[in-house]
Image (tube, rainbow, N blue to C red; front, top):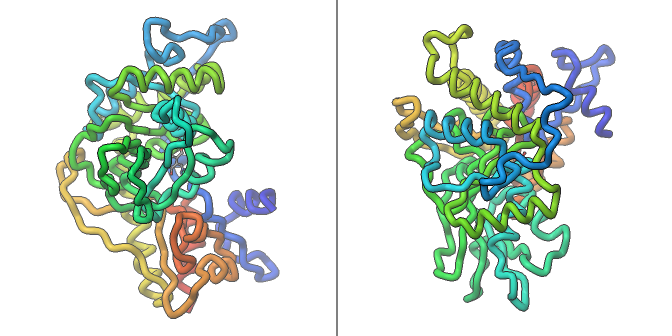
Length: 385
Ligand code: PMP
């Protein structure tokens, strides 16, 4: 059960308990707890105080299209993109959401023709993020409908294509696939941050989604943001959130603003920053080390394979850098057809390839759990032969 799995995650680092029973290692979800140790080191730098009389109003800035957007949060979003160089913010409207998940739905709502006689098709190239089909269809909307993998989309009609770059689950950079004039694009850039991928240039698309969940690891704060070129689309996304939740928690926005500020500060004044290491230095270093260990374990076992990535120049670090995705897209070799079942027999829980519109010989494994869990996983994987 979930309770058992949670207690496993919080348990000690010993591989086996006293009866010699292997622990369950749950790497199904992409819970970014690996960043916890950095934020512990930051101590009070990220503490904010909200007094009882503050944050009462629904409204944040009625002169803004997104009237529930906290100006402090907007300021730190713009600053962080400038510091990292991963997205153009000039001439963009910022729409804040309860996670980028809410903004994904807001984008579908905003981009769907409102007077169409049938729902617009929503597509993404497989393997695609497993939540897209579920989120698109769970309310059986009359506005939009999941139409699956871009490869099998041949209809000559309007569509929305989700471009996830770097991609969840496989980590590769992605570009639009369908490329027809009736299409509109949503760029989900949740992982376009230096710890996962070299930053090649500031992303400059019509509608881009970001989230603190994957950038700083504050998934529980539930804050995402959209950078939107078109004013009408930004207005419609705002309307969706107004109808859905009458805005987004101010407390969370203020907390997210402080977290983003500390990240930017850590990059800008790295040499004088007390801890001596910027957030992206820390997270990149940990991800590089984890991928090294994973590749060694996979080689040792001989039962699996992983995607291979080439190095590219990162404008943020000023160096050549590899890719260290937040997930490992692992393939079972040697004729094992159901990789998820195979690994679950070794008490490693993963997400099966079929959820991503792909084969069952693949699984997605989270690379962002706590150190002790990752260590258990590597040792367990090495022992599989
Ligand atoms: N997009 C992608 C590609 C993701 O992987 C995730 C989280 N797994 C999300 C969006 C949703 O993130 P949030 O926590 O901001 O809702």
